[in-house]
Image (cartoon, rainbow, N blue to C red):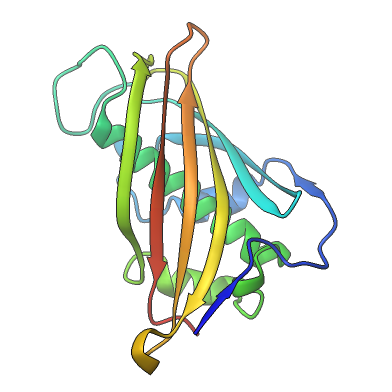
Length: 181
């Protein structure tokens, strides 16, 4: 059985600016030097939830300076923006498949149950990791019960990053949320 809905069908277009308290809580599991997302906003319109973020990576958490944003840091940045988008969607009731969740449910499931099933990306021009921007869009969200087993939520998302000098990369990610309430 598959049920598909990106946002609640009855939800009007809405904008949510910075929520520094929520962002701080979303980033709590990260090491201090790996908190790349500095500010974020979320919107829902035209049947989609989108999050935008401002990022800064003063120093890579695992390698000498490459001079540009690399695939590992794109993945970490994606995770942070995706977690924030889901948390804000839970808080505001934006995504239909999360409407029964509370923030406590999200905190409990954030690390063990939200999984990247597929991650793809293309680097078009180098991005300055010290100051860049990003966006994630939830393209579809499905509740599945494969073979009648435990239900899970599968979301297809698209992301893009850019900087003020014309750097850019983009890609798509499929996430799976298991053991949901």
